[in-house]
Image (cartoon, rainbow, N blue to C red; front, top):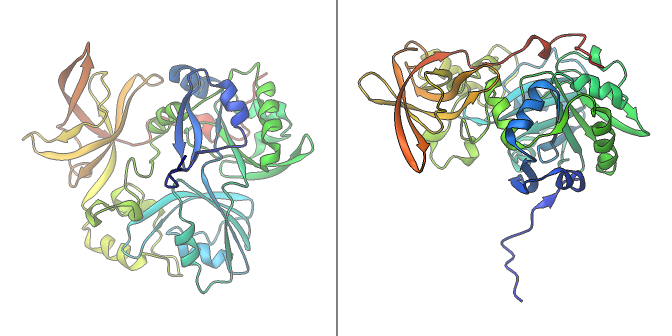
Length: 399
């Protein structure tokens, strides 16, 4: 039998033996060449665990790149738009990076172990671009995606679960801090980071420890409403938190087929991450400085509060004259806040100077027919959900 070499089987993460057993729906998703569950039981139950207990997600497919060498600190400073000169060892920072035209390549997190050792985590594969960008710097860039197993442990009881697991004094770890542990005889890096907008942590270890780690964490959280959760539940929590997702809320510059589809940080609400006053040059600085000075940003990514309870998924946004002014990139009815919310990309001045009297054209399915709804919208702060416990130190503990 001839084999079509254009297609390769999806890889299994080190947790697959456990996630496949936990999955009752057999619904999977291709994430960077790995197969991961979109849903284990029901999205509603998994979302509820994330907001009321402990949720566990296989994070292994996230792209992870190790940056090592005497110029590592200088290279990272050149790569990203944010000024990281005051970043301390054993901390994490949220970052974006652009091409020379000032268009966003991706966003992600940077883990600083020392001035000579960093780990960059992001949604899309950028090894080739990272390697080419390192030309002239005394650094090495290594793709550690396959060699680092990762779990996201999120929710109000997540700290208590990890304390039971063996992470002593974890409640004292500050947001965007990280700490190395040795638990059950193996090393685990725990960072207070996540993509749910709630109290949460991410765990990083050698793939050989994955099954042991999964079993121990599930046992540690059995009295704390622990439940594995998939991509669908994550989508709900990240929308509530107002977090953006590459190639969903904006197109990565290298994935855009047309230049007009690319976005600058100012057009996706990430202008606060552009530090034009940092002394060193960073990729895209000239273009971003010009855009800031001329004020020629064409779009903005905003939060919308929408009338009614029908999610505006994929809706077109109009002004009073029924002129097309943008599109919804992500939407949901929030069970926690009892609000109809969305993220939308709008043509300026809408979303900046004009925040009311705009409308979403929603097509809602009802018994094999679509009902057209003309729903009034209001531009609001994009971070819809941000509980106090998210940043509280010490973190809340439960028995």
